Image: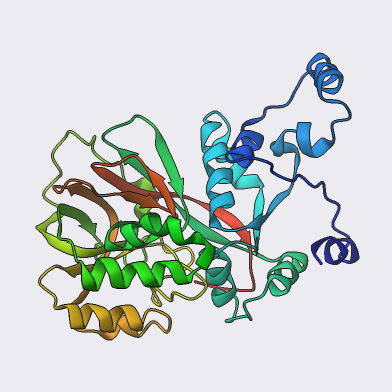
Length: 343
């Protein structure tokens, strides 16, 4: 389906099939080879194509076929190219054809594109039309490592992270696995997740978050300025959203916009009853949870989370990363193929 549509639209392209975890990240990191290096690659690996050897800076766009995980690899690989990361993000356009389990970004882009139908064919159609809009990217720093991450989708800790990561044993059930785990972990055997959450509120001068790229975060071992607000409590849900959908069937954050530079943090404290929590979970598909009593939504330009409970996970764009204290800000944008959106 994808190849014929690209050819009919006159889009010249190379194809690369990933064959192991981390392959997409490795491919993004591959720098332009010298002619001698090219010869060596051909001798060792047989006939190598441009898709295997060409520096990604020589392309105009990257189209991913898969779920959010392959895009996560792509952006971490670009982030690893510290000397030309900004230039690549400025030049390249990105597209996603949903072929994974959750496909949160693909669904969000189609939602922003005049609520287009959620199908792989519609995603390819948006790509062939060639119109792009900019999507916020966030930079994440952790206390336990000097490594930093680029994020495009969401961050979760507490119940949502447990549902995403601990339910891997039920992956054969598809997206249903997280629903089952939500009932198990959130309703039948709930946990309390204690943390200190600090955030930088939207200012009167920056009501659209566009100045967030100018924010310099303090080091993780440094105190925050008086402009920040801090909450310490027991939580059930801590979910930071960059997009409208965390999955094709989870309308997490209806108010989220494509490039406003704002994090929307969904919080449910442990004091909320199981019945109210269940009502929220049941309304996630339609977005009706945002009207439920007990759900707090905080919009901010940057935030820091300091977990005070053991055995918790940091879940970034659906991927497990190092645990412990974490902080983030929006730092850049990337061009994604999308319908004409102005949000």
